[in-house]
Image (cartoon, rainbow, N blue to C red):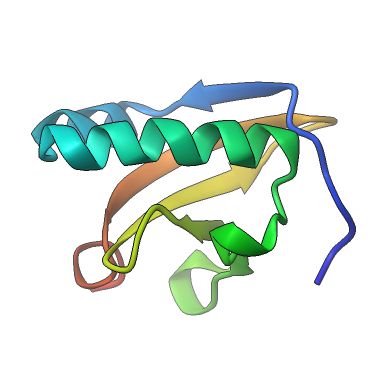
Length: 93
């Protein structure tokens, strides 16, 4: 696992924002709480941050809870782009 990494700025892609809006409010709240952990350390063990494969080889994801994940890309320096949020099945089909 990569070393600890602080996140300075998170940008939100259009698809991510649309998907987030459709989620139940409790999942939206959980995602907000997880984002705070993510900002402090993108590789905090509670997040299960992992590199993706196949068509998403340039992307990473972390867990909001057992079912939901946030897919993201490291841009430059300490900037992240959130690409999508959803269940494992929704995001990886």
